[in-house]
Length: 231
Image (cartoon, rainbow, N blue to C red):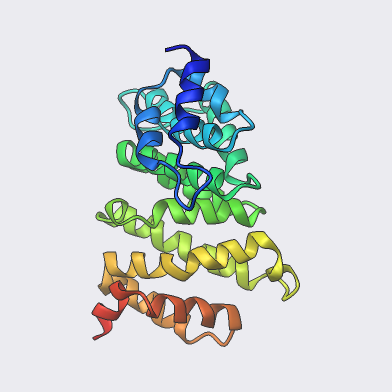
């Protein structure tokens, strides 16, 4: 199938416009598409093609790690990481979500590499980037071991601290609001993965008088996964 025919097929089966894009099709594309096609679609102006291409960059990063399970500095990793970082701050939420999904692909194959990327992105000045990193690691399957849990907890703590450091006016911007929304569920995912170590950190959060932290706490307390732990 030519690249043009593939683009047409993806567009026809994207489920867009609509509330939920075709994630299964994007998964299939990311798993098998050629490198050149992935990079071309990651740079396409069509939202769904960019979504698919961005997610596919995760697989390219895994392949660049070879047998070591770690990513190497320099080309092509630098180019791929720069692409993923740029898409994490895309104006369109679906593309930003694709960046998080791409990091999860890395995390399933090379968790140490993902943890390093997440830690670096949590220091980025763009709140959209921090939200993408936090959302990527706050996935139950990636939090099962001690290193994954630590990476998830560190991301939640760093994301919360970065939000608290903003002025009330800055917090009203779309990026910080998006980060706050992500933290509104991410904490409960991390705590549920390791209640013994996660709950003390969440209890410290509950002691805060910051209004946005209070919102984050209340949102997480409303999640069934946390309700079950506290019942």
